[in-house]
Image 1: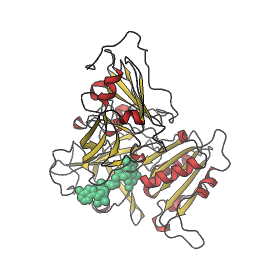
Image 2: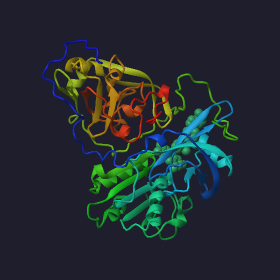
Image 3: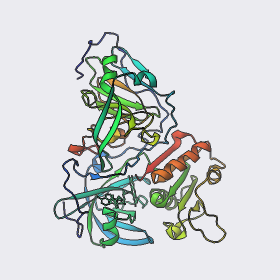
Length: 264
Length: 201
Ligand SMILES: Cc1cc2nc3c(=O)[nH]c(=O)nc-3n(C[C@H](O)[C@H](O)[C@H](O)COP(=O)(O)OP(=O)(O)OC[C@H]3O[C@@H](n4cnc5c(N)ncnc54)[C@H](O)[C@@H]3O)c2cc1C
């Protein structure tokens, strides 16, 4: 209860229900199972695949995994002998899988506590703990036409969407714009198809321009909109997310149909 | 829980200010927001206290700045596991606004909402008694837009998703009503010392 420092309440107070109606994107579009997200589960590393000189994919068996939607993330925890724990969020790279597996793709961050352990110590058979899946907001169940824009490891949750689209043979339109420093740094390079345009910021194959994601890329991405328009998903560093979401808004994409996942 | 083979953690300095599961982000101030950063001019910014109050009130930028200044110097904790020590925000204590709007006796909770439509719920007791602020300065600079400028709510004793960016108002209720992240699986209160991250914690 409020302890008033002034006058008590009058009788004619309106009966409030909630905050004013807003244009913010459809909260709670995807229900999250609260029970499973709260539980830490043991995950066994089963496979490590190198993607680029700085990124690798880590596959885990998680027997009690409740499943996830493309775009969701999880929380991962490591514990030292003395009880010290480190926990970080990672997007799920794999598409929904009912056999209790998830894959994460981690950049090796210089001096990084958790990504450093993964890239220099981890081996198949090692155990870590996970909880999730978390946050339904960035998830894409495959129901609406989607524009995906990612940079660096920001492509990870978007790849889960692309893989889901393929695995289910979905007819709903999907386009991916992915930015990387150069061809060597492009995560999942061999898996992209006609839905993907790659943009290189530092070095590119012969005949391909070098530069940042620009208005022209976004205009091409937004061209020939499907009925009902696009749902846009932007993921990457904060700088990239600011840049790409601004380009989308300038190109006419409604703000309430842009979802952003920032990696910090 | 089992020890992770070969994980020692980074060489750490013991830090009693760090809630469980958090790490010190030091000079970093990560931005975490699911929205497009709005371009909100101070001339467009207003702050409203409504719902179960004696008098619903709205303050413009200049009117809010005419209230007695108040600042917060201390730590902040984000649910994504980083904490930041010794930050300084300046603005006005939320008490100053509430004292003028005069909450009804039956008001127990609030929904804070932003100019973009973000919402988050809080027990009223977490917003009163010098524990919440509307702030427009970080350090001695105007609060950057990506961190919620021109003005945001801060409730530093709770995880930072409760500290709504681009704050537009709070609405007082006689019941609890989950906001945006709370409907998306986050804890209703979010006390970092109790590690109340997700619902069920
Ligand atoms: C929703 C979400 C999803 C994400 N998904 C992914 C993903 O799919 N893939 C991915 O790679 N990342 C992802 N991230 C980022 C990830 O959570 C981590 O931030 C990242 O892996 C770095 O963690 P780390 O422990 O390796 O580095 P940290 O130890 O946190 O270090 C980060 C930086 O700070 C410096 N630093 C901080 N403290 C110290 C200290 N005390 N001493 C020395 N140096 C220090 C480090 O040198 C390094 O440069 C995601 C983040 C979020 C929020």
